[in-house]
Length: 134
Image 1: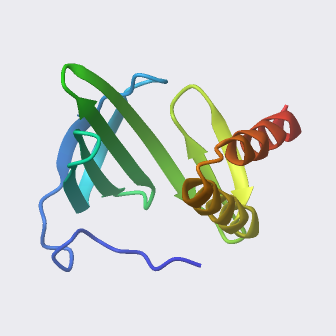
Image 2: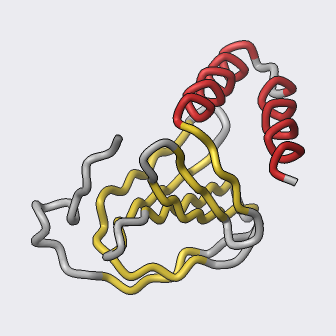
């Protein structure tokens, strides 16, 4: 389903060895190419968010996000393995496997809850998926 990419500059980027900090699981060690990064500031909330995406040599993705308001911060890191019909995501402590249809459904629910400010739907969807994986 996905196209294999080798770095952000047609494979000419150097292989980086980095550690993505994670407050909600195990820090993720990454050896790969930086595919993309983004930083943005929300004037309304005062939140600064930084994201980085890496493609490891074995094809897995590694994603790190850090959000901060003042002195408070939240750091999350994930590794994602793309398969033919599913995607496996882990934060080092919890591993979930989703079909691509389930991922798109979850994304749609998340976008709708953001729009309506009703996060209960996303929490319920994740809870159901966690119960199904047990």
